[in-house]
Length: 499
Image (cartoon, rainbow, N blue to C red; front, side):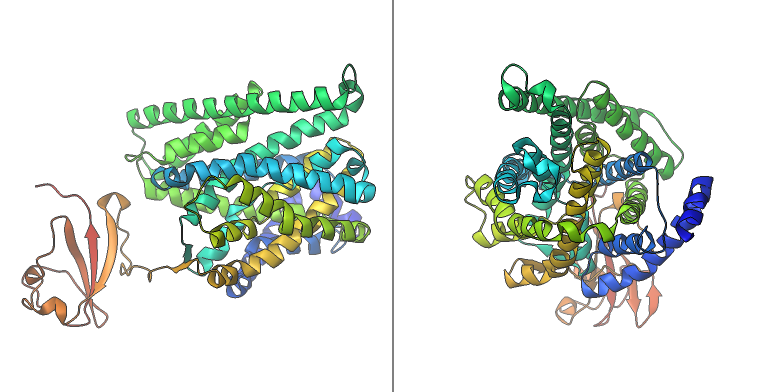
C-alpha cells in the first residue's frame, strides 16, 4: 500500500518533496562520512536504497527519465572537472593520463572480459554467455570516479606526490567518455547479434565496427570540443555581462552546445563537453573566475548528490543475493588483476613514476555513478541479463566506495605519497579577488624584525603587499611605519603591480 501510494505521489509531481527530504538527510549525514574518511557519495547511495522499493517503498517507474537525469548529472560533473583542470599541471602528466584512459582502459576491458566469459560465464547473467557480452560487462565497469577520490583527500586536506593529483583527475575525466562510447557501441552490437553475425560473423564485423565507430566518436568529440571551446573564448572576450552568474550560465550553455553538436554528428558528446570546458577554464582573463568556480562547485555537488540518491532509489537489494558471489569474484578480479594490469602495462614507457605510485593508481581506481549509469543504459536496451548486469555493477560500486573510499588516505600514507596541505590562509573574512594574485599568510618571528621593527624594515620584494594585520584578534590596516610584534599575523598578496 505504501509503495503504491508513494508511486502515485511521485507521478503527480511530489517527487520534489521526496528529493528535498532525501537531500536534507544526505547533507546532514555527510559530516559522518568526512569524519571517518568515507565518501559522501556512498552515504547518498545508501540513503537512496533505504528509501527505495525494498526500504520505504518509493519506486521510480520511469527508468528512461532516471537515465536522462543521470546522464545530465554526469555531464555537469565532467564539465566542472574540465573547468578545474589546469593545463600547466595537466601537460606534465598528459601522456600518462592518455595512456591510462586509452591503453589502460582497453587492457582492463580485454582481460576482465575474458575472465567473465571463461570463468564466470552465465553466472553474471545472459550477457556473460557470449564473449562480446562479457566485454560489455567489463566496459561498463571500466570507468573511474575522481570526484569520489578527491572528496576523501580534500576532506583530510591532502595532496599526493609525483603529480598523482592531476594524473588521476585527467584519467578519470577522459576515461568516462571513452567507457561510455564503448558501452553504447557494445550494447548496440549485443542487442543486434543476428545482424552482425551475417557475412563474417560477430568477431570480424563486430570488432571492426567497434574500432571504427569508437575512433570516429572520439575524433568528432575532440574536434567539436576544441572548436566550441575556442569559439567560447572569442565570445566571452567580446561581450560584457553584468555578473558572475551570467557568465556561469553562458559557460554551461556553451558546454551543453558542444555536447549536443557532437551527438548530432555521431561523436562523443561527453568528450566534446570535457574538452570545451578545459579550453574555457584555462582562460587567463576569464571574467569573474572565482564566482564561476563557486557556481560549478555547487552544482557539481548537487548533481552528484542527486545522481547517487536516484541510483539508490532504483536499486533492489532483495534481488542482489542471487548475483552476490559472481559480483564479489568480479570485484576481486578487477582490484587484484584487471585494474593493476591495465595500469602497470600502460605506464611501462614512463620511467619517472615509482612502483608505489603505480600501485596507488591501481588502488585509487574507485567506481562511482558512471558504471551504474552505463549499466542502466544496457538495462534499458533490453539485452538479455540486463537486470543482473545492473545488480552486479551496483554491488561492485557499493563495495568500491566502502572499501577503497575508507582506505584511500591510509594507503597513501602507507606508501608515503601524502603531502599535507598548508593551513588554510587566514583572510579575516575578506573576499579578495583571485585576479589580484596569490594569497598567503605569515606569522611574524624575531628573525623578521632583525633589521627593524616596522613593516617598512621588512623590505618586501616587488609585487608583494601586506593587506591586513591581525594582532591578538584586533585588525590593523598596515602602513610602512607600523611597528610589528612577534606573533602578528600578516595577510600577504603576491601578484603583478604597475611600476
